[in-house]
Length: 135
Image (tube, rainbow, N blue to C red; front, side, top):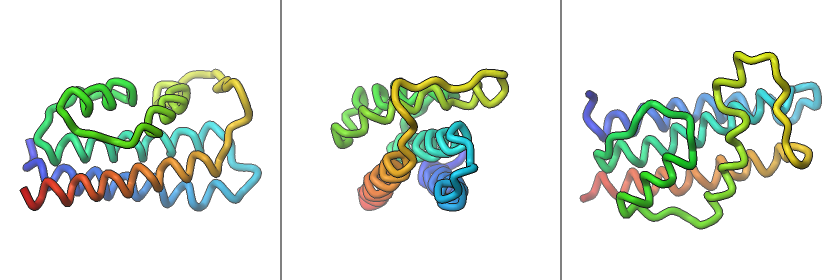
C-alpha cells in the first residue's frame, strides 16, 4: 500500500478531476443531473478517503459516504456537521451508472448546492491533510 501521505495527495488530485468535470457540466442545462451527481459524490468520496489515508486509517472499497463519515467519526476525526447532508448524494453512487434507472430524488437536484458541498469538503480535507503532514 502506498505511503498514507502519497495516497492522500493522489486522492485529492483525482477529486480535482471530478471538480473539473463539474465546472464544465454544471453551467450546461443539457448536462444530466445524474452525471453531475455522480461527479459530486465521487469528488467528495475521494476527499473523505484522502483524510482517512492521511491519518493512516484503512477503509474498505466503498462508495458509501455514510460509512466513510462513520469511520472518520470513529477515528476521532472531526468534520463540519453540514457534511451529514452529503448522504443525499447516495443515489448517485457508481453502481447506478450501470443500471437503466433514473435517479429519483425528493426534490429537484440543486447543482449549485452540489458544487458548494464539494468546495466545502475540499477546504476541510486539504486542511486536515496538511495538519497530518505537520504531526
